Length: 167
Image (tube, rainbow, N blue to C red; front, side, top):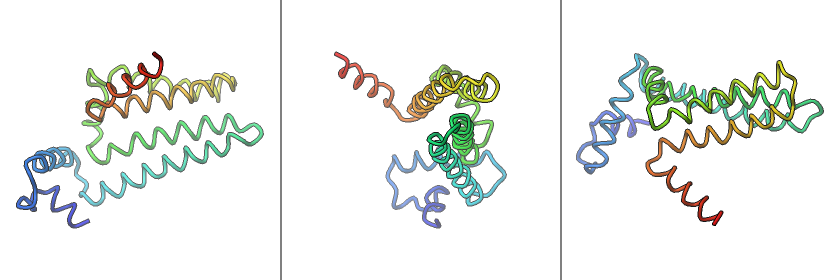
């Protein structure tokens, strides 16, 4: 933990290359957006992300119970929301929102948010199990596409891979 803190605060410059220094500056700029300490942000990120994973896994387990599709949709959606919200602890909520609505992520963000909302509507108000399951699948795909937008050239690689599989 101390080594990570030193690297991110720039106190370990003699062991870093140019790329590491650029990444260090990026992380420092991102972490300066909150009044919480670094260790507190890291702990809450881990707690929020882990709870999101637990909710999603629990929801998947509930899917196989009689009448569990509604619980699956709710737990899976709350798990995705918690996992998405966990990054707010690392970069701050305003910076997270700005990044979510950048031009490269705008469509993925809108589809993801709509899928989250429609999953809950289909499960809780419309009582359409098939539709809830369809929106959960679309939710997974949109979250994956959204997450890939943070990795350079990942979307292009997925598109090329899928197109080579189809042709």
